[in-house]
Length: 215
Length: 393
Image (cartoon, rainbow over all chains, first blue to last red):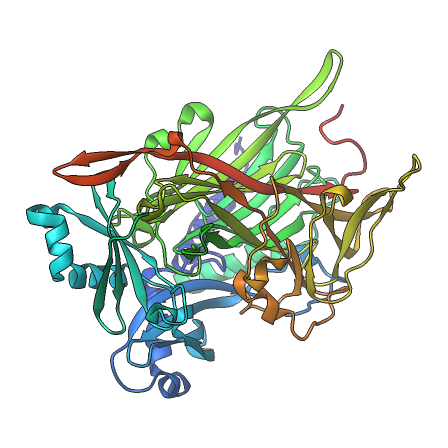
């Protein structure tokens, strides 16, 4: 194919080498809509926690990371005329970090620009709007397993039970879970779920409520 | 020195890439993500390409499978048209008939995504497992399969006596592990430009309310950016039978400001999303129609459930369906701008013996059994996007 054209062959080989180099460069940087890498998630949290505005919103004391979420931003109201609007891509790389402070029961959501390494926006989130996490369920489980009623109910095989949790949002103005961070615990052994009683753990007051009523 | 040469080569390649594409040649797909999050699907899978989808997806804790970009190309020489900027299930509301519990199954919890196994996605059904980060999955650990990609026959695209065309579709699906329940989130991209979004609820009835009827109502947030982000408008498709006479009329009034609107069965309510400039080869304005696939209508005391559709102006922080009433107060104009449409459908789960049974072990009562999948969803259908019947000789 390349007979009589050594120059062409050389150029082709150079092209391959250059393209391999390009591919290596491309592999090093995430494309705009790739999921956040573990490093990016870590950076997002670090940037958020270093931000003076966020610090002011969050205040002093214990806090934890609820989640780091990918967010793709676009130039607002970009006109549809001219150019190739269908091919317009996202602006930069962004993450949304949600932090929770148990004392006071509230969270702070930060929009982090990962390229500029700065917080673009930080807003307070009221406690009932901060999602539960696996950590909340683990904490609720530990509290429940120390509760006498729960221990009596699960008996000597208590450690064989796994716990799963749902948010208990409260059912009446008298129910503290209307305001507090509460977990409705489900207990399972393998594929089987225990049907009674209902166990509600109030993480805000660190109390366990066991309801044995008919279901 | 080598690095400089390499960069120069890269620039050369970029310049070549930026050179106008010759008319009649295949246009390269817009690619904003890397494989396996980038899926380029040409149809049909055998023979010359007729239509194509270029899609980016992610599996996210809390949201499950999210489409982060979708472009469609109606012929190999046509330009790529953006359909979605982002499409996701924003909420799944689960109210029980006695008034409690009332779960917001997306925003209440940072749920993981189910780690799939080979049986979820058999190769014999056109399936390929796609890996995601282990931190998203349950069980956790190493990166592993969180999404199933299936490319499959979808039955008849059209039929006329002995002449027919079978269609094909690409399906991306995964499952959100919401404690006792799993939610299957499915996104289907068809060879005729149609998109289908569905959610199924399946799993174990809430053990402490195992005999209590309830609803599962997903709300989808669909950021439809037809041919790009700006210049979109939404019309409400309304059908009217002029009773008692024999005639019928259809209208499609513009939705000028943000707000919610109900789905009405007798009106065949749909949303028509137009772009200001996108036209087909016949000069007709192109649009995509959001068409409900539903059993009934769930209305509850929560204000966001007072409507089946909502239309909002795009704001990056507006992702939560239960906040919709605040997003539209005060109402902003939504004509010829960047719009987001939201759609809610409900599964009415009347519990049945087939869901499971109580069994007693060691003196304790357990629930055993699985509620089978129940689906609800929508169709997004192109209208005047093609110049003629697609998939037709």
